Image (cartoon, rainbow over all chains, first blue to last red; front, side, top):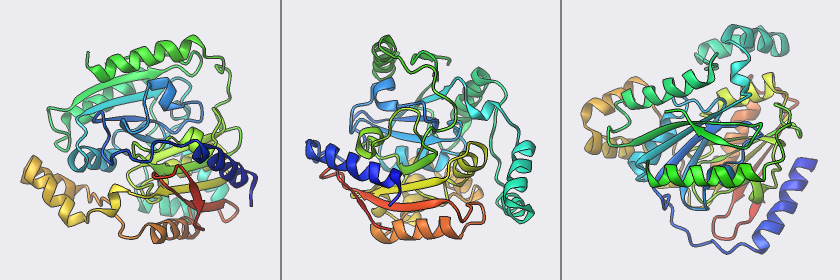
Length: 170
Length: 170
């Protein structure tokens, strides 16, 4: 068993020993979803004030709205959420590369056949050069999408990994 | 400002007031990624023992490996993670519907043109009928993918929303 797996088992024993919230409902109690980045420096629950059972939390590289569309539609149409809080963050890895550079790194590490699979899957890494503009663009994308009803409340934010603060952009 | 947005601002003021971890590095310190569901009843940090800065956390509807592939490749190839911990959970919404049923719900709520957009985007909701088998299938998918190097350590788990316990499947 790896150190990571041992750590998970130990954490699970501790967490479940004092766990008292086993009867929460399936749909989020506060009917909203948070979309943020997978970045290791973000802990959404305390940073954004999410109590257990309150909100869906979707996370991917860069907090991409396009990449999250499947989960967003399921959250809204099948599980009744009506508000989206989108949070990107300072120091995001997605600010540091472009698709072609990333393809080159993958090709060097894993070989040309793998990049061929990337291209077949039309895998866009969805990097962005400007943080605030990316927040605005993703919120605009959601507002324009037919898959997101006009009644859904959408806001866009930036989390500062340096200060722990979250500030509103749009 | 919505109640959700007010709550976020208040949480951010509290969290940042005592925040002391503003100098963490961009890549995850423990070089692993956790892939789990967006479900509101999961708080990965305490449940799985993830300290701030240690691991990427990817979350989508159902903890789908296929849906997470872009983020997984970025995590491994550009940010150096070498281990995947995949955690699905009991009581998952993805166990409760099939694609055609979900399309019907979306069509009833948002109208036929929206379902047309779903079909154009080839949006598979990726539901699954059996929890343990879905964990095994997603781990097998990752092991078989050329995009995930053979050296990557992969384990599959189930989090029990009733007990707060996480148990290994594969």
